[in-house]
Length: 102
Image 1 (cartoon, one colour):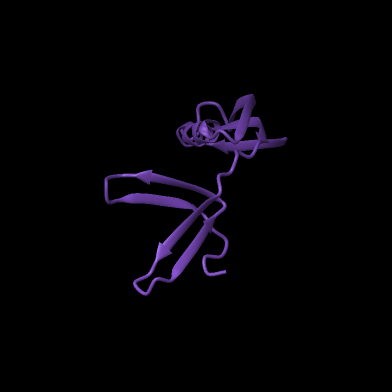
Image 2 (cartoon, rainbow, N blue to C red):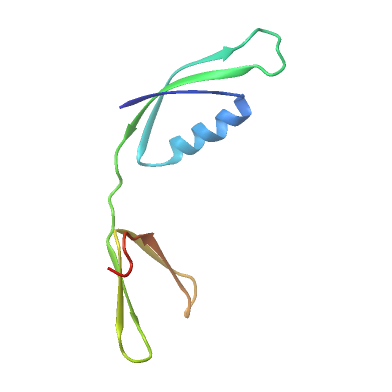
């Protein structure tokens, strides 16, 4: 578990914390929130202290095989991949690959 302290203006902190908590691999527990600076200051910042646990999500290996015009196969291995069929002729394939030509 990590202890994280973030300081900034509330309108900057909110999107950061929201994005962090919306990702399934992170568990965020807010511990404290306090204003920073002198009361009455226009640019008052906030300090947020939180505990963050990281739990990796499961990875799905994907192999894509492309065929060239001269019947050679090109294999691309993704360690964490996905495929989304957008239409009958278009499929979006994405993922993480360490070495495409290895």
